[in-house]
Length: 235
Image (cartoon, rainbow, N blue to C red; front, side):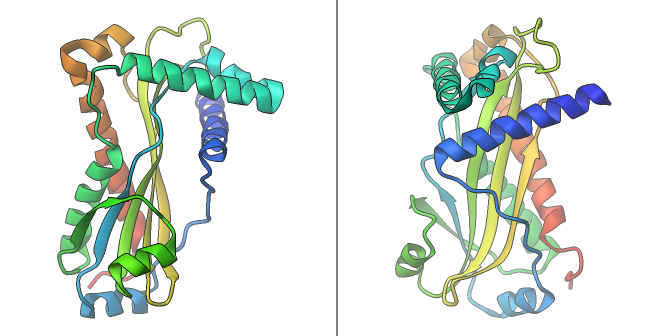
């Protein structure tokens, strides 16, 4: 239990630093009100967006994460190292933003479970600014997804075994009524590593194992978000 607690604390601290450097902020969850869900069922289809591009892919070890102990400069150097390592490991491997998979699975889930009309997927959205979204999409409701963190990481509880990595992702989803500039629902999902492999194993066959683990993590994230969407307002 203590090992799990230490791992979660380190991952949350690393997440906070990554979000700080990427300009993202953590917001408290917002539960979808029953009246908002009922209104959405009667409106035109929701627009769905995934913000692009995703943040840089990172590769973190207990040693690189240790840079957080040396203040802002150490943090910046650590993040530069993990970003460079991630780029090196995935060079020549075309990875897909996990939020795209989260979007697809989440949309499929809520349309069947909550009786919502099939949403309209919009591509190439690069701004989370509500006013800019309204200028493009009008006063409709929009469901938006954003990858906050995606990386491979070692077991921070065992600094002497840093040659095996697992996939770690976190994504955010929000439902916004653009006409009123009101956030109706907001939540995050996060998946910690379950399995581990060496860098070489993750790179083999055009990154097949890494891609499969990212898909599995995205599916778990989507299930988590569906469970958090609304437990009180099902038809």
